[in-house]
Every structure is written in structure tokens, then in C-alpha cells.
Length: 376
Image (cartoon, rainbow, N blue to C red):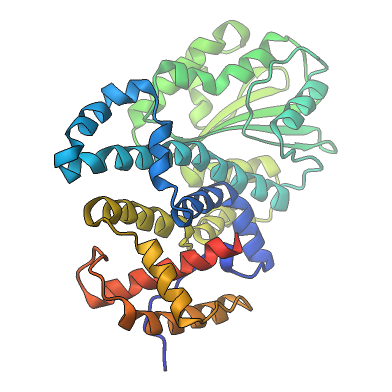
């Protein structure tokens, strides 16, 4: 019988082809978050996240007030757990999303850049910079991506941001903190150094102007160009000192073109590389399903006094069919078989969805997460 359920792509459960290893490596950080959520879910520790809320949030977010009212109002008792979980998710994801962008550019430079040194760690990037600038005086500031070509004596240093319409002047100025230190050395580097500031998702041209102004303000006492010439960094690389250049790239097209120009090769594959990799890393289900089902599980526990994880485990044990991890397809087939066996046993009104189709898919996704947890 043909499977009528939608396809699911859980990277953690898929076999590791060369392409899949690339995707998993780029998405390593958010995949780790998905694993954390699934672990909390199946070890029934979601509610424990509330214990990690600091004292300020107890009153600033109304947690204490909700707890006072929780005895006679289920919505009030639900709020602290909901708040704690969503804060955990968003604060963790915010820190991880930049890692995805860094890994994408790192992979492009490794594959197409023809560089003999693309350091993976920030400490290694700074060590390389110290050698290039012939100094030991360099703070441990962050540099997102770096590539160096010792044969052609050129180095690319990238600071990457996902957006440019958030953060105040301090955040905008921090884009060139490391560059300011390098310029302050007043040392001619061994290589030509391009300091490339990349904004992945530009939203407001006014932000571009204010960002450039703030960067000029941070660098002006160390550079050889006036403000008018400095503003050209949004179109072309600008020479700041001997062998030191600065450029800004807004959006994936400009970033790709900047990398293409720096690499200096007639092979235009690099121009398509970013969009190709974006397509590859856009097609996965681990995180959104884990996050959504965990959110719903908190509601079910709070409002219905039940746990769908417990109910699933009870019914899974009762039917006595195991997951088949031979391949992603055999696992999917075994899960579809188990769904059909579990549906007649699920008599509890605990699934917060309306249609029979949605309820069946909900059980199926819970089974995928159970298989995920067992494999963890």
C-alpha cells in the first residue's frame, strides 16, 4: 500500500552520505538543540526548566504572580512552564543560528577558495592573524570565518551578522573591533588582508548608512581615507592602510560575489554555492517538530493532566514492534506500521488537534522523536 503520510527528513536518523555529512556539519548546532529538546521530552524534564528562571524573571515576567493564582486557574499554572521552555528555546537558538551561517561560509571557502589554511577555531584564526601581522599583541576577540592563501599572499577575514536592523551603535561598532586593533598596530601585514563584513539578511537601507557611519567613527584615527571614500566599502573594497582593505556585503548575492572576487578564479561555481547550500540545509524536520511537539506536550500536561509521551510509550510497549534502523526508509516503514497498530489503542482525548489526519500524523511524529531519542 502506498504511504499517504508526508515525507519526514530527520537528519539524525538518516544515513550519512557525503552530502548528508555536509548538511549535518553545517547544522550541527541547531541539531544539538533538537536533541536537547527531545531528551527533555522523553525524560519528562520539560517542567524542570522552570527551576532555572532567575529571580528577575520571577517578577519582571509575572511568574510569581501567575504562581499565586495557579491553584484555581489552569492557565496561570501553565504560564511559568510555558515561559521557561520558550525562553530556553529562543535564547539557545539565538546563540546557535550564527554558527550555521559561519559553517556555510567556511565550507564554501574550503571547497572553492583554493586556500591552504581555513582555521576552524577562533584561537587558530587569531594565531594566524598574529603571524601575518608579526605581533603577539592581539586580544582574544571573535572572528567568524577566515581563509588564507600563502602562495598568493592574501587573507580573508570575515565578520558575519544575520541581520543589520537589530542592536545599537555598540553592536554596529563591534563589527570592526578586531580590525581597529589590527590597524592600531601600524604594521604592514605579510599578506594582503581583506576584512569583509557580511550581513546575511539586509532589511533596511537606513541601517546600512548608520552602520557604516559607526564603523568609520571607530576606525577614523587609524585609516588613510576620509568619510566619503570610506562609504565606498558598501560597493568596493577600500584601502585603509598598506595591505589592509575593508568591504561590506549585504545579502547572499553580494556575499557570493565578494567571495568570487577574492578567490580570483574564472570558475563561477562559487556564485551558486551559497544558494545550493541554502537549499540543502533548508530541507529538514528535526528542530521544528521537536520544538512544536514539546510545546504541545506542556499544554497537554497542564490542561489535561496527561502526558502523551507516557501514553505513547505504554502503547508502543503493548504492541511489541520495534523500530527498524536499517535505513531511513525502513525506519519510516516500521513507524508507519506501528502507527496503524497504535491508533485503535489511543482512546484518550489527549491530542490537541482537530482532524483524524492530524491526530495520526501527531502520533507518527511522536514515534519519530521516540526513535530519535533511542538513537541518541
